[in-house]
Amino acid sequence: MRNIGPTSSRELREIGIENRDQLIATGIVEVTRRLLFRFGGERKISLNYLYALEGAIHDRDWRDITPARKQELRTLLDTLREELSNAQS
Image 1: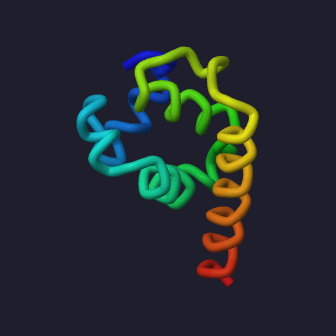
Image 2: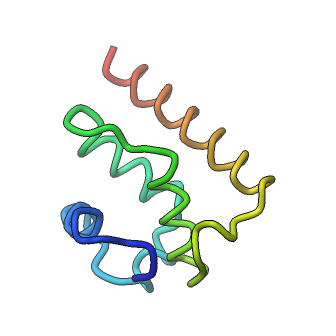
């Protein structure tokens, strides 16, 4: 997948995402939720990771994501991190 390197590919496989079609079908919200749940304690899931996923979903370079969409992804990541933190409390 575009923008997705070997480490991210391995992590995505571990949460059940083998290809772009599965990434699209699952959606960025659920994929991010799974990544945070699975890897949040071991490795920080970064905003750049979300940009890479967004680029992979739309088959474009992550740097082409609009500023408005980047802000939406920032908000999404913050929301999901808080959700996970509350669930672990």
